[in-house]
Amino acid sequence: MDYGAWKLLHQTTVAISISGFVLRGAASFAGAAWPRKRVARTLPHLVDTLLLLSAVMLAWMLQLSPLAAPWLAAKIAGLLLYIALGMVALRPGRPLPVRVGAWLAALLVFGWIVSVALTKDPLGVLRGLA
Image (cartoon, rainbow, N blue to C red; front, side, top):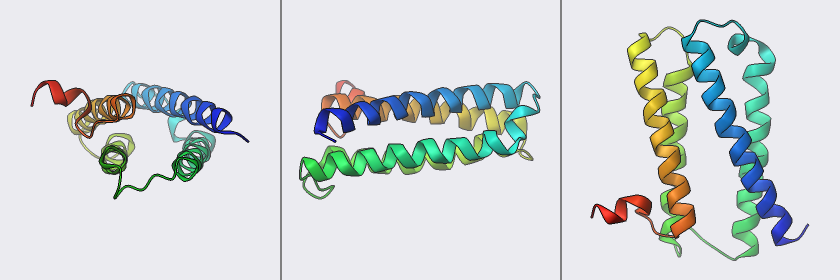
């Protein structure tokens, strides 16, 4: 696969991943049963594995390192925060306001990660506030 194909795969899996996160969160908060089913808990891992594979391939093709590209390090840090917030948001057992707050915070972090990717700036959209 060439760079363009890997980039398209990456962007597509990003869109699928965030769409699934939004749908699972909203359905979970509304009390739907389907987010607790095995396929709804397994499919996101497959999508996110493809997303991560495509990200690694893009970085490799561009010869990027998080040490040499601060914006890439920022994206990785943001991804870890997004995952942690997503775990809090989608795990039942915590109070609903905590879960909704974590879900909204995860969506904000996701938006920031996209802004970092588009601007190649570690602060992304926050640059205007600094």
